[in-house]
Image (cartoon, rainbow, N blue to C red; front, top):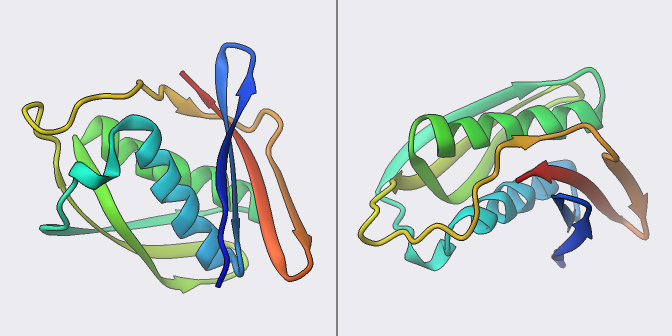
Length: 139
């Protein structure tokens, strides 16, 4: 399974592009990438488990809403995801186990603050058996 994640410049924001072999794989990679925009993921331990659920009318909305739920976990509950595992996914909903730990200011040095996941410029395309998504993050 080949996945790719890269950041791209966007005026006053941060663009996130990620790929996966399936929608579940794409959501897991996007969640890991979002966390990696906030802190160094190698400093996070997988000591607690949470469940994140999201719904959307189409795949793009599902992606954005899923990332918004993860961002709430990161910013609102100060919980940093290390590993994500999609348990169930349908056309309009996803449930994902998130392993990580509470933010520890002594060990988790902030890289940047992500304020929001936006719909601006969101794309989701399939090519050669891979899904690729682009999402703009408000920093």
